[in-house]
Image (tube, rainbow, N blue to C red; front, side, top):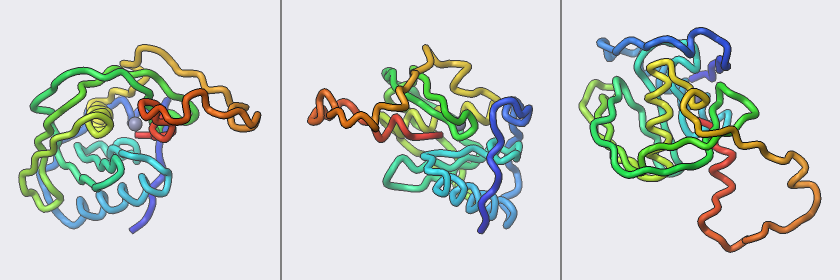
Length: 178
Ligand code: ZN
């Protein structure tokens, strides 16, 4: 396994429509393993093949408890709505507020070519939508409601969070890159 270089906004590879995979070979398995390693190395929760310069319909997602390796993923059901912070490993240093479905069902294939279905809610739904957008050349900055500007001195002034026990604020997720 090896980590791969992440391409960033401005690279035309991020704007291409990726091709469906039709050969479930060793090369595909290596790509998926490398992508997972690259995602973990960069503290990401998801990574799509075009982010490492490969124009194939392949992505990996780990929203905290399971690694999903998805080949030719397609959203077949969307339900509800959520508006929340979203970042991208290919758009370093920025976060935006993006509206996504609260729940999605995704149909895909495993690395071995077996059909799989993933139901994602909340942050997993957001991550799945973000990665599948990448396969069509769409970045979150194209669909965000607005940019979120973070005060970089926030952590240095010793101030306590206003609502430390408020479970609806999830600072970890604000750091999450997809
Ligand atoms: Zn991304």
